Image 1: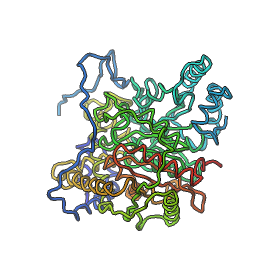
Image 2: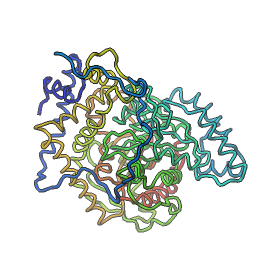
Image 3: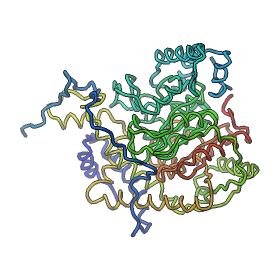
Length: 93
Length: 485
């Protein structure tokens, strides 16, 4: 499966990343090589095999009382008088 | 203060006999760091003031005859993807520049409660993504055995610190080999415990179904001691295993005669360096001479492990790293009038090339139309890889492999080709996919004097047996402290 520059643009948009035009070609080539490599999984027949999301053993559900604790955010970016300030969410376009 | 030839175990006894004070050792250690770490560059942040305070507190306890923890006065380094309250935690990324966590990771807290002295935070590949520590957003770390070579990664700073004597033990994290491979490259011991054995509360998430905290040290005994301290159930980690306290140190010297060790034929194929192969074969004969029963086994799906890993790890990473948006943590790219532009430009400026590549690959694997073909398929192959090990552990107690197909490679050798870098993890990633414990123990050196690591993999929660095997191996082979010049 070959990844084109337009695929890089599309995936970058989904991932909230900006990719400069100058880097698109190289990224498309690198990702194509990796995808080509992972494509060899297709040699395997996995019909009837259950997927494994996580190998967890001896886990008990950690449930605690719901109580108010100290604020845990600490990012200084945009932090003003106990709130996070961000640019406009709704813009005219 | 030169810590060469000194282990954590030895240092603790020197304090007890009042031959040294913690304060003089830690003060001297910072002087050593000023000299040697200019070349190696293992540390991103040093915690000198807090360390000196902790040192005098431990000295006071010893002087007063109060009981002290099992790591009293031992200098320990922490990989910089674990939170420490009020101490910069960068994860090797510019996007977390200036971020100081409001809480401390459980594993670090447990070290402190055992009276260890935290020296500083060590360098890593950005968000632990890499096998050489060249992907750090700050600077690269050099291998103390050969400064022209990489220390491995992603816990390269932790391994380099232990190997250069600027700490006696270090915490690392291992998602696909990030403790074991740098341990092998730098000639030290590194253990990645069973998934769930050590709390990950306070560990910055990379791939949540694979990440595990473990440790590195000069000797197997020191690793056993550190692991014993940091292990155990933690209600703050929903994947923490509810298993009783383990005494890894107590059982280190118990016999290993008759232990069945499997050697998977799929790990001795093309791509394995011939000198590494011959060192590992000598290691196999050493285990035989110790009375272990060696057996050839098959892990038939091994060739699919790397592809499976890079789909699952990147998919999880693309989701975990969505939180770095310039709002809650670290840096923000200012000057935007629109929220989404601010997100995009912050992420663009803050993430390095490898992190962006993995986010893109992971997003691709999860996107509509490709989810079944890539992500779901990889999860199914993961089941087959797990079954390979389940079948093997019906016949053998442990599995023996090389830790890495090569010795430490040269700086810059693999940076141009991401895929060749990914393939250097080929022997370590199956452990993570199957949630199993694995240890890398020094196994001699090649003709250029570069360390070779031997890996032992055990069934879930069999760290005690792995440490025991490694302890006997290290003593019989004379590998203890073999790194020291």
